[in-house]
Length: 335
Image 1 (cartoon, rainbow, N blue to C red):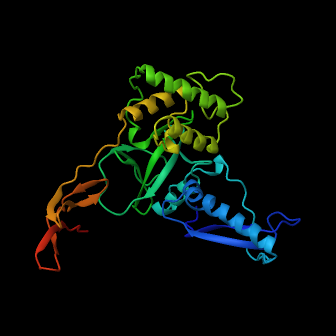
Image 2: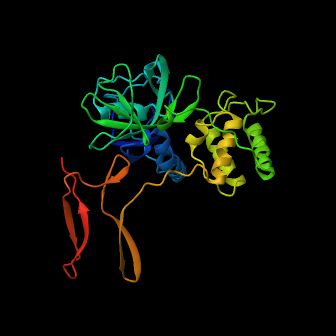
Image 3: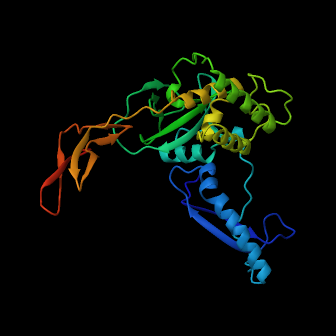
């Protein structure tokens, strides 16, 4: 939430205090601009944490494990971040808002009020400068200007005029949707399942039952999270789907956006049928044959999720250094 560029973990010796023991070893990693707890955990904390524990045990067994006193100056305990503390302050720069949203992703979730109800925001990315994208305006109390619902998500503005884009939204009832779908009808035609698809559904109903051990029966209306599931159960469900559905790779967000069993099966079947494939971005390639290969090179500017020509019409010649010939005319962005 503070925009730190470095993260990591510490293995320390236990003592009578709370997290005050001598340091045994430490590992650190770069915090990427759009990182969340989940992405850092999957990329670094989990794999390197396992290696770190193995290394710590080995050092102890060898009698060579260090004991480095923790510095006391500036040391503090952080309280639990609760939902009431995760309300977004819009009177700050876009990067600060972005850091606050990703710092609260997924728990407890940064939120704001829209039309008198809480709306929680997930999947923030800090947008590079450029013209504002086309979208339908959405008023947010306290924001410097209306946000925009675009095909790439909800574009939000800081008090410095810069932007960030949020991928997913969650309503007070727990339902999560892609931010791009905010103004679209929630009415979806229910799929009629084939016999094979019904068999997959019943197999996954049994999977839900094994995960949700406190629920005697999984109904179509059973909500995964209201029935007691936590974030690690999401990981387990995603892996179960991969095993049972010919390697189909869901994302954790897919589960959050289809929390009821019936919704989950409908989403899954659409994926299996290929109906939920991501929209392809139109690209005007320059095609050429070189080294017995046919290659395609985009030559336009990529702005707000689409390839566009430069408004000024200026181009930049890329030269083949071996013969001095022009290979591609690239469009130049002008501020």
